[in-house]
Image (cartoon, rainbow, N blue to C red):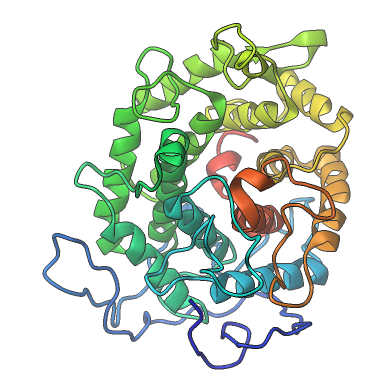
Length: 427
């Protein structure tokens, strides 16, 4: 639902604007005090609103550069150009316009029945996933819940997740039966990453308990023999769901939360199952243990998307970026024709950024112009990416505009969103 706000980069206008001003995302000074608002996160067990008045940020070491968007000049990654910055800010404005009053976002109903949004739907339904992805886009650009122009949007989104968290730590808010069967742990993992990043960026003690409970739920849901995760707790494993859970564990660890080492060891077990090396190139399958029948046979074959996931997970669990297996896998990705797949782009962009050198340069030279050129520039959808045009995204019909837009924003934000999650193990 749209709510009247002041005009400006972080405000809301009823009429669509054809263009926005270029925002230079240069390092800025840190305020000494937190946001002066009087309320924030209300849990079901809480007695009332909690204050953040006067509380200074205490970011974890891994997150200290995030808010100021400080880039290491010694790294040969280049700098984001103004077109990138403009695309990110325009995308965040789109997200701010479509946040519901309860702080959530929706995959299937973000237009809330408004005229002109009749075709804006998706097969999958998960307000938890949509809210987590949108929240990650704001956090990835350095906007937290303490102050600055998107503090209200970020604070409301965090409050939505915390309010709906179950006693066992589960963040998933069930919706329809069909979606529930396939998006439960996807949604929880995404939302957990968002909570952990909020803790890491601010050191907010009031968020530590919900974030730790969410981490504990992931650990409990891990398949103890296979080592990964699937759609529901303890339900076999696949590389895709496992990727989100591993990112959540690493984000939590770097935010100062507790993650048992054996959880990482189990993930390595799954990666061993999923790995293959046809023609000497390291690749990963979605689920190599799937039954050999027509409906599941595709999951047993490595693809560029699942390979990018597996290789990034290998960096998280200790492989070196100079490992010949890493390089052979990235060579496989670069040798495959480009596909319209925001999910693949999200994983491969992080992977190539941390591989550095020619891998990053070649990948970025292909993807960056494509993302910028395909972003809608005017009208009610300004700042978003169409899931069907100019080419249909691989998962566009299933997940819709909100999904494609948030993943593309996260890819564009990789310059300042990336964490030493990867740098610790990929030197």
